[in-house]
Image 1 (spheres, one colour):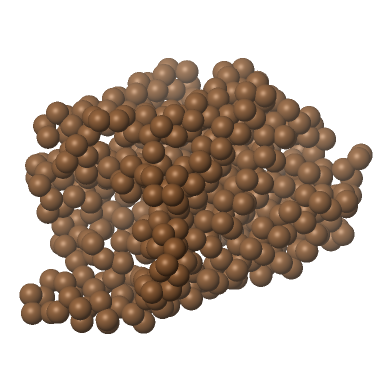
Image 2: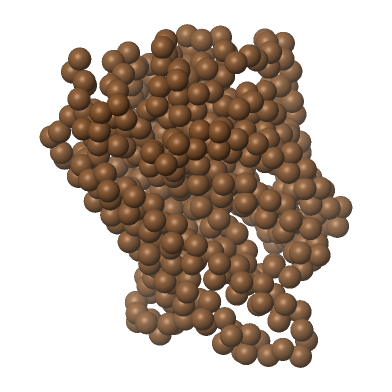
Length: 522
């Protein structure tokens, strides 16, 4: 037990130490001596001050997307791998959502499709988790990063063929992993169900994807690293450490395994998906509005706060478990400290949008991204509060935690990725979205469905937690009382899935359309 806890704390310490070392390097190389000019480094000459809304129909005059010929040259080498990542992530999103609805229905209709092992709750829910976590969110996030990194560093993507091979291996690994899970072969740990033999394929694919990004950053044509670059590069350093250590076969056993499991599971969200989402938002919000973020210095504070505090957050999931109290307390302290970087991100991104609220009304891409950013603030505040023992004693082992997890992974990261796709694809393809009104429909279906889903699980989970603390309460009665909330969860999930299907249809219609954005040939 001591060995595993010591290993995890050592790894967390090394991650924080690496962050501190990088911080020292950044200070020595004047990366933190920032100015408004550094905040505007994402704009080309004469581009600042111009509203960019490529999701609007190209016939709408000044609001239409202006084709960027210079950046088109930067985009070109990575175009094929970005389109592959975007297309496959869309397939994973729709497929994973369907399995999610199936798993949700099984919560209150357990006998439905019970004759097939594939459609049992255990397999359907696990397939859903892996398709959306390692399929939709990871592949979409990497695709967006491969598109944005060259733009941030003003240089084309290096080794695009290597990145393409990496994307293919990652996609094949996800498909093989969920196929194995559907057949009953998995490692039996939440977020780590894909058999470690298949994880080797994912690890190789991830390496081939990360190398071109790091090499592109190394050969950057700008001295300053914009904050989005910090988030993306850090994610590509942190995730391999998490993934490889957690998947080492035969190393983690018993309670030690549970400790490792939640160290990994929580850090996948905080040190992988969160940097991808926050980094994307830090690029798109000012880029769409045409103005730099409210305070660029605060944006760097948010990144370094995440780097220094997050790595030891996940153990608070084991409050009450057979682990040393000091380990859990350390995790609780780090969770509360996360208020610092979260407030920094909130002040920056929300103030930027509120001061330019006209852009929120006009750009559907911005609407998705900022709504996702609001969800990030809410999810992070909620997570820090859940780590406190008095709150955790009520919400732990209830549906409240499921609602919280979806607030972060879906409400935050997915909405930001939706907005990124709506912004990125017209730039990447030179085509307008064929049915602009469908973007608005997708937004409202997402918001309505997730609202029903989150409120139902949060309320039902809270009442469930209160009842579970009552020694006189019948567990059967508690379960029966949850039925309306679980039915509302299925309703909300179905509405969200309908939005995803419309999004997928619209996405592939864009790829197959023959229209072009006015000025694309100029």
